[in-house]
Amino acid sequence: METVGEELRKPAWVRRVLIGRNPARTLARAILWIILLVVLRSYVLLPIRVEGVSMLPTYKENGINFVNCLSYVFRAPQRGDVVAIRFTGRSYMLCKRIVGMPGEIIAFHHGHVEINGELLDEPYVKSPCNWEHAPELIGPDEYYVVGDNRSMDFDNHTQGRAQRVRIVGKILL
Image (cartoon, rainbow, N blue to C red; front, side):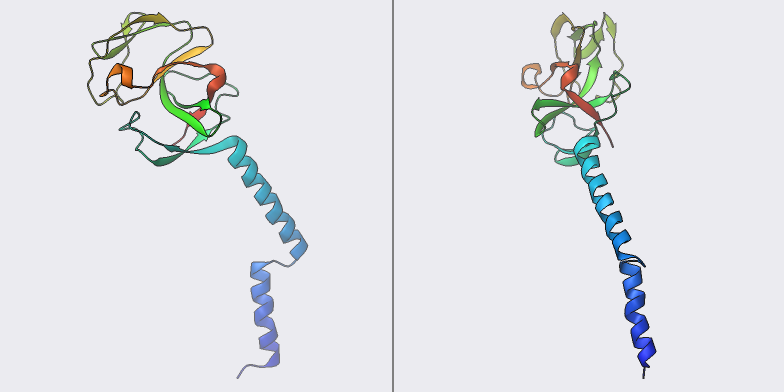
């Protein structure tokens, strides 16, 4: 049989573990964490769902990934980066890989990307294709983006120029 002192200690111990010694301080910490997580989710790590097959096999359909919105604050996007491109607001974005940089001439010949007449090594492309596209100059503030799944016809594949201001950030994971 427990004594009165032991009965009082049990709730105090449970209270201390759950709330801490100072409830006001614990509440302030909880509010601070909530604010930090909301800011992180809204402005730094944006969750997105990959829909469609254009990035197979690199990213699976209906997979959840995160966009690092701060990745291009201090540096420009690089060739090979998988980026989120704002299509219509933040609710609908494209997930594509950058293959062409500003000022370059890009073409597709026998399914291979040519940059300024030189073949681009793309180890992430697993499906062969027969894409043909005449050379075109990429603008000074544009990037050429395309998906990794090249098994579809060129006209059915969403690809092309993306203005720098539309690139939200780099896809993580």
